Amino acid sequence: MANSNFQLNFTGIGAPKAGTTSVADWLAEHPQVCFAEPKEPHYFNEISAYIHPQPNNNFSKKIDWYAKHFAHTKPNQIKGEFSTGYMYDKEVAKRLYEHNSNLKIIACLRHPAERAYSQYVMFRYYFKKEMLDFDEAMVKRPEFIDKSKYFNLLKPYLEIFPKEQIKIILLDDINKNAQAVYSDLCQFLTIDKHFIPKSLNTRSNSAKAVKAPVISKIMGIFTNVMVSVGLSKVVEQLKKTGFKDWVIKQNSKKLDYPPMSNFARKFITEQTYADIEKLEKLLNRDLSHWKK
Image 1 (cartoon, rainbow, N blue to C red):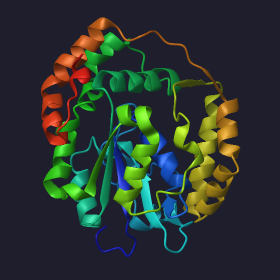
Image 2 (cartoon, rainbow, N blue to C red; image 1 turned 45 degrees about the vertical axis):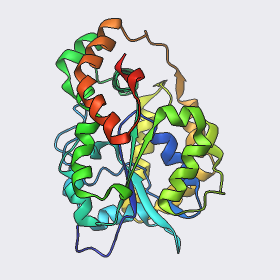
Image 3 (cartoon, rainbow, N blue to C red; image 1 turned 90 degrees about the horizontal axis):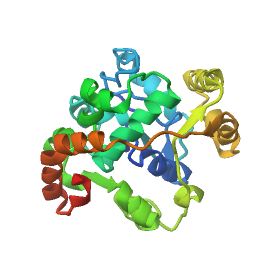
Image 4 (cartoon, helix red, strand yellow; image 1 turned 30 degrees about the vertical axis):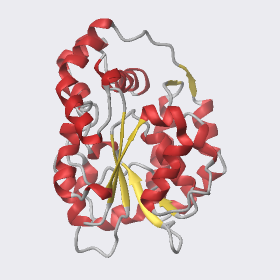
């Protein structure tokens, strides 16, 4: 990895269901940014979510395969991607540093219990690969809570990368003032903050159910084929026309699901309490609303 001429400029490492899609959408629109197609190559992580086949096959591929995700790069653009699996695999920080020691890292965080439940909803109703109810899943699927222990997950990055190369974004702040978060992010990446993306004040990746899973699968296959033959630009152009969003909208339906139980919220809060306190010290910020 380290010997390749290809070099990434920034990456989002997660956490899943914590605002990463919104932030990725903002950056993908920016004319000074070349965003990977698709946005989550999952190249540096060997470990995947439990619902995906193990090990992660992308991890063993050549750097040339990874570089094809950025074949649409224009002159003077910085290159970046968001793969939410990077935060959960503790070896990724070292691999990313070996790839580019000047790499900028973006981490999006959310109320631990709400993030865990949102991920569960996606696994159960969107991927249709989780059959346990949430209360039971919290006890039997440690990944849900482990991915909400943010300080523990960020520690490998904080030990290797300089603090000024790590940007931590809270979904609370995105919901409160997306414009301010976006401007700060642009300064972090040294890109023009005066360009305002259309997606800035729209909600991305909200919970939904798929009408026909085969359509989503075909879209994924098409994207992978185009990228593999160096035609990521075709995928990018189709996305810009709004065709991809149109297909997703037509193939989705409103998702109704029960609220998180008091048991689950209390259980997750107890499991993440100590980690939240460490994160408060790191960010020098009161996160007491995450403890209940």
